[in-house]
Length: 156
Length: 72
Image 1 (cartoon, chains in turn cyan, yellow):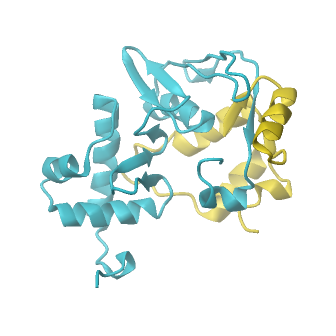
Image 2 (image 1 turned 90 degrees about the horizontal axis):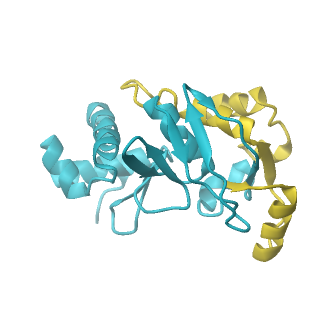
Image 3 (image 1 turned 180 degrees about the horizontal axis):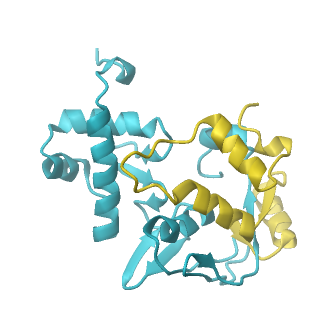
């Protein structure tokens, strides 16, 4: 019987290194690393990397797909979303409008978020320059109460 | 969290999905959340906010209604 993740030895150094490895990979390659690439890039056994990913996913900042590959490393999405973010010549996807604005915050870069209205797809591009959100229209809407965010992550 | 043109568009979306209206924020509040949550994410010593820290961050930008309570 496989051991539960909580029963695995904690490896805070590995977890912290993997977290930064994933973010740096996203920033440089504009996509998520595969789990195999993480293991190879960090020179750690695949099993150790999978266990570290499971621990990181307990923070909710990281979410895995059913096949064990990354789905989200907030604010980045590993799959295309309705929240593309352009920073210079690079493009990323945020998980939601909060995360899309979080990408230029995290990278401390100017950006253009190619967002649109969730109701009618009306284009609502947002700009970030010199650490400020440029003048804008619109509002954000959370469909799910905060206490239930991680029970229904898609609608959240 | 989705972006909308107006509260009318939020209500139309809610009707389409047969869901009650949730919590609405100004984009300045969304920006504040983004800066609060992601400003230090590349810090090697980063750790996730505790529930109390997150709740305090919500309160700091005026999100104090029951909808924003992290504990039921």
